[in-house]
Length: 436
Image (cartoon, rainbow, N blue to C red; front, side, top):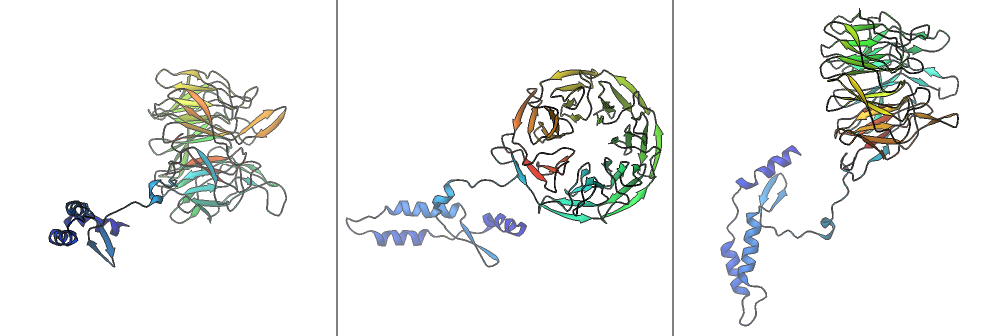
């Protein structure tokens, strides 16, 4: 394609043939007394205009510039539907190739080359049996829409965290390993995309699952809260240093939390909100420069298993979750004032859902679950939050209902949703279209 572009750039440098004498001679010969099929000046003007516009054809490996009168065929008068992501007139979900392994409670990480690393989680064995934790990992290639197995983790784990480091490696930490000797993990390991292999790194100070992991501006990773081996929420926090592969304790949180959210703010601080068993309204800030936590204003509503999304204006959108019941409500945190304000409620209550910031600044919330009539129902619904108007609108529903899934924004603007509880190995892609 590059060679073709180069050839066409040379067209203006090629001399056009002087066709005027030939045109005049042909036109004169065509004139008979009393008969003119077309004024010869019009013919000449048409041909010369074609030459000036640079009509050209490719012959073999060369470019020959000749006069060509281009008359569009009827099929060219209407544009064919675009297959480019983000160019469809309406948002859509489409199925993509099945994963190597069905899973939920896994992690998904966008790698620098645009591929997505999916690791660990829970799955039912293909031949039947009890739910098992996975050590397997696989890669999704958006250019081909295919999955390929990559190296397996050293330990099987679910409900862990995965963090992309500045050097392109992925840090996986904690989680739970099931089976007869099942326990909460303190171990951590690194995935190297260049070799497709995992290697052990230093163990965390405390074993934990359902914690958060946040990459700080200095390249270290802040891990906070989670449930420990006694299934109790923890207030401890620690830092991973990629340069040494070691963990060091940092200041403890004001409150013990699990199933909370952690959001890196533009000023480098980390906002932690909600969590605990029944949901908490409290929130606090971690300052990397001092290694300390300070309480900030509480949320409008207590919540757990909610989502938190940093918006382009620096505010944080917290949506859904659970408290005494499932929540359709949403609210905004303003780092400038340290206050929370309610925004419009979602179309539908969601918890254990995903929230993804789209390139146009809107937030896509998809899936999750809700309690209806005393039953837990998995959701296929999706909706969009528009920060400009503070409103939610329903968008196209997913092909399949799912919860405990992951959503990853790809480089081309689409969103890859993978796995989920009650879900087979059937991922799908959300294309925002031009009307998102």
